[in-house]
Image (cartoon, rainbow over all chains, first blue to last red; front, side, top):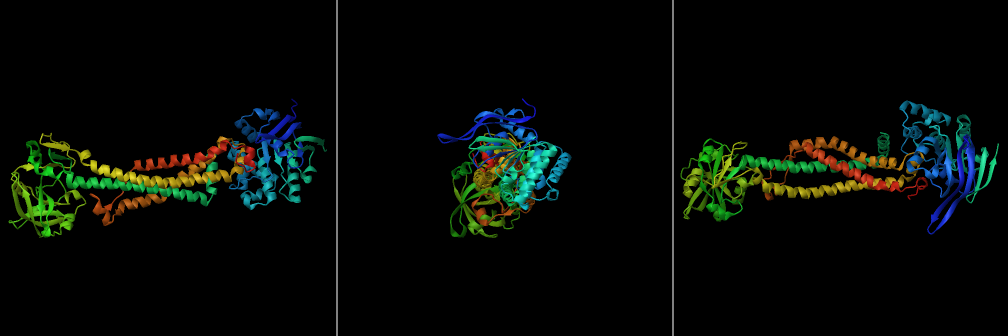
Length: 231
Length: 393
């Protein structure tokens, strides 16, 4: 295996049963991604972007074929191993931010580190550093319902990045944001990608995001129809 | 440790929902402790009153004596055996002679028990000394309880005619002068009975030296060996009816607090079901962040269980002073309750033992843990992708 390839997807098929029949969400997908990529899975709604992202994040299992993420076959991971993989190596950013409503911004970002059983001082330092990356140190004690959409998504980015994961999977991260916030978020993620060499995989159909991508994998009806290196 | 921390954060941030559950649970907890303590206190008071005023350290009954069979009374007297009589003379025992009689208060006939007692006795808490101070030597001095006085209309200084049969079967009659009316919670020394001096009753019955009941001094260690004519009954035997009654009352009160606890637990169960439904997206996020299903189940179960702990703590905060206050001042009973029950004091003092707290707390905790856990089983079937979309698999 090429040591640089941290994601290898091989003839991946994902079917969803619909009563007696099934719906094929992903059809024979194969690609690989190297460390430090800033890659987008691009395509219309229903093209399979989120399904692929979920499989790469070990949140779902392929029906056939396999995805090997950081040397681990998603298909053969137990629930516990999948949780371990997500906990240690993968950060998630969701379209609807998915911040935990009863926690403060600080506590939301701190959460991943608590799961990793980091010490208090180490946590505090890492959380404040992550909040400074996204420019929200002044909102550390705010609750999610006191934040704007852009701020909430920046907190989600900080939460995904605080544990310094090898891969960040972002599902339509700008779908609920205005143009200015979308650009800010993408620039923040691009900066982190360049500084920390974190691999970013986006599921998006937002042109604003696409303009920042280094690689664009175009999906349609569950198939890869194009795979372009952009710069 | 992490799960406890997260669970505590979650429930303290959940606001009024948490505090309503805590209030209902703690109310159930305090009420259960109070109800149980109330019955324990009542049992203790009734038993203490009976020991002090009637049964002392246990009783010898004449072999034919059966308090529930009025026809046995006529036969149930014998000479006090020598060894027991020695204890009577030493002041360690009290001989009581019981005779069935008819009295005629206010011109009506009414059956009653005439009980002979040594006026100088110190064994039971009956003001028998008044029977010795009767200036009127032509009449028989009699002592009755307040309930007997109320039932018969007799007052202090009144005379009441009494008719009885002596041991030869001959009817005789005399007047008894009521020299005192005593107040007692123990109805078995009050209702339908008149206390007169023992030697007078023995002479009326022509049964010198005879008795029906020998009551031993309270806390006496050496009980004289029994003889065929007299059978010793200890506290277990003498309290059997009372214990049976109290157990029946406890069962009915247990039904009440099971209902109350069920309602409180239903609130916790509902909260858990609602939490899993409302927080399914959060569950998906927790999975995405790296929590296993069992971590999440533990978290939700612990959140529910912490409600039990908070209920216990808050119950202690307001319950302990309240229960201590009630234990000190007592709970007054309406007169209606006293008129139907037996030996029920006018004021009951609840009694709370450490065992009661521990058992009630354990019941509360285990019940809360179970109802907190049951709804979380759905999480084991929840797919992370469905949860993130806000669906329940």
